Length: 361
Image (cartoon, rainbow, N blue to C red; front, side, top):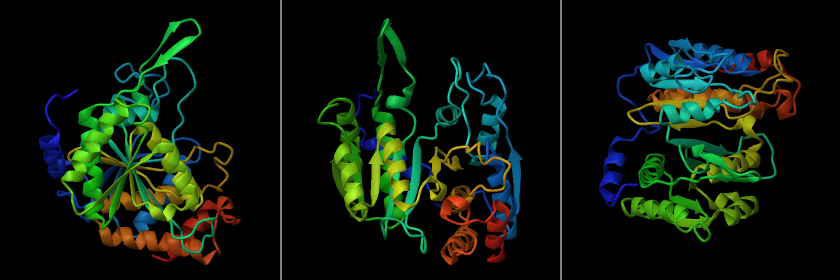
């Protein structure tokens, strides 16, 4: 844990952290992007995304990466060193869903990517899709989740037979930088309020430190309203009235749960984009839904989440016009209702849905 005040750290992070805004060095002429097609329906929705991006006039060179079939001893995961090097070289990636094989010795594929690449902030916008009815209208919130520590630090051991300890790790460094990012994101995206989600009434030291860092970040952004809410109450309030929230800032586990809750408010993970942010412009957009092996190879998968994640990727690169065109084409296709995949209440194939989107470009 760092001993000095985090005010100086916060100032430097605010100045240098990656954000969902233009990154120098990229242009609309040619972009090299690391692509993880993933497992199950992943290759099908990745193929659909590539077709849509091409139709939008984007010249993207896809550096296609596949995880290994055995554990890479250099990463203790089926994510290989070459996979990581591709991301570090290109600094931008798009990832389909991945499945970690169940068994001892396997490190989670997603966790490996986030930890090894230091993708410290996960950003998920949850917004109501026009023309697609759910129980809630006018949802428009963003979850910002610390991505590298907390309960997902992977520190577990058996004390004695039948007794297992799992350690939750909260550090000033990680908490300060994700808090700084959340307020920076709010300011850049015309958001009015940041709400820190916690359980400091029980975990006084761990979540207490997280809140301390959030308050210090809030002090540096007086134009953004700041609130705090206990995690269980946050879940209830989200179900009661999600419109009361704007940006939700959370440690790892709470962010994992509440971001999925937010997705449920708007129709599910199949409609929800996501992006992981690192330092110096490094970012990886991803579809956060499952691999749906029962649909694999049947031309029934919904590529919306990966497409909208790709839109976030384009905005991160400063390609706002192309991003807006693709997002509008996707949302207009859903709103029309003629071409929808099965999970959206329609009967269209992946191919037909993709062609309908391309037709609007």
